[in-house]
Image (cartoon, rainbow, N blue to C red; front, side):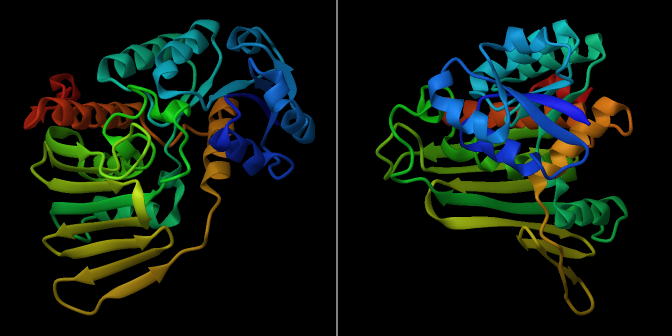
Length: 329
């Protein structure tokens, strides 16, 4: 059994803990790091978590096999480096970092220390996306020409002005850090590194200082392009469609994938519902135990952060911006 400490027991941190606690025979949480024990004490007690005052205490505890970071995005880089320096495996919620430079620094530290560094792109564990990636690899769709993606929802009235997610810099380009990052990761997984980005973002209706309407056009180094939309004040939507020379594939929801060949009938496949939070944490535990490599390659994490930062830069600077040239390596 792999024993983990969670840093950040907010909404998603709690989701991560509850996905495996008393459910998995491979991984569990034993500690929670919090500077506000009065806030998390009751929940920690219910889940059987011991309280620790800071990350340093968790890194010094030999009973803890790995760290899980569900903290504000701006803290990730320094916390990953701290884990690397302590030789402790780390799992990081997306986005990995806010800038490509920080991502490179964090990956370099983890690689130099030889630790497991896992990123919580939980949608990669959906059977439908696993099958979609296989279809791209084996050429069933031909050459990929274009992708359309949308991940939207409704946070109007749910985000308070003092929530860390709406603090300046924590969520550049509106919902891109909280929702769009899922589709952005899938785009780089399927199309490869992004060459340049043109993006637009605005706040039309939200009361909190966060954009609610964001769209981007991304062009990959292979020549395939993608459109990505993320809205924060509308009905929930989770959709991706790939267009290739031999046909198209449409992810209509997390469990439904439709293949439409250029010649022939469309095929709809429905996949089992999977707890992707549990799946990613068990994969992290397997990597710590040495059973298998974590299935999100760090080079693709770097591609994603290069594209993520480019979206933010395009929104601020206007026009088309080039993704970091280092990605080409």
